[in-house]
Image (cartoon, rainbow, N blue to C red):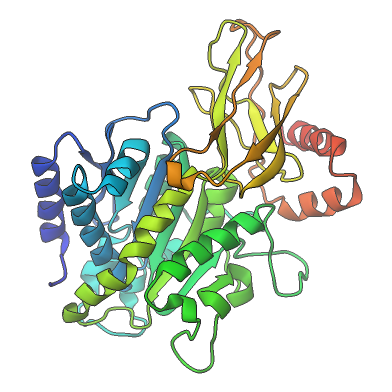
Length: 420
């Protein structure tokens, strides 16, 4: 197999869509600095739009233009999914119950600029304006002064317009699954823990343990080892403006960063092997979008309530996770007992205790709806706004100081009031 440059990539994606028009939807979410389309192929039983109860999943590759393995592996994945649908029962159920978005390249200009394939860093890492797209997002810990690039803006808008639940971005130059947070304020003993750290560790291990060799943790040279093939992002090295933290904080989407190859731009004849090494892991990881609990928040007439806050107790997000236009929420949680708190600002919270099983094999998270009998569709709460400035350190400090139960809500309310 050989590398797909812009023209071949577009032809390939258009060919797949033409061959499988009812299973796929092809669209461009924006353009690069040099005007190349940022293509996304969507796969699923309802590829063109979101359906209630069906979670949205995404893979993004090649945001560093010279890190090329992910770009080609995702084309193999597309081929595998469309040819297995209707033949393989697992893939059929997966695509019937999940909407999968695949973006083979976020930085087409950087890829085209990399003239000499090289295992190490080249200028093609950056976009045409010389920006590192993985340092270009708003940051949850400090104000990121980088001017937002067109590729970054396109992805931010895309995240805003879809109800993404789970995601991974594919890189090269190491062999490890890295998870949130990538940045931190104050000293946290070399580990920047998110409120959902247990879920992130599980997600990273799901990938590494299903990969041909990542789980061995040997890394790419003797200097660096990653036990079980995973690492907390900050423990590995600190970065500001990364895409995975942005997804988690502002996009309500759990994303991890997958480093798939020691060599950034390996010879084309190795691509087939990279696909084989990653195939099972790529599929098993998608299934994790069905972890946890999901449901709808409705008013007394059964109409959906958008922007209701739904969170698991003891796991507050600095931007509270909210329902979408259809009143839906999705919370990724490991099996166990949780108290789910639904709040329509201005009304009394509703608490429900749920026992979450491991449901990924059934391709559906546990369903738990909330109906607010005192809310009618005339009274729509003000949208609780999300802080635009970094706040995680505040949240960590305050939540440690208060009892986590009742006060978390009070804390949330205070934060929301302050940042109105």
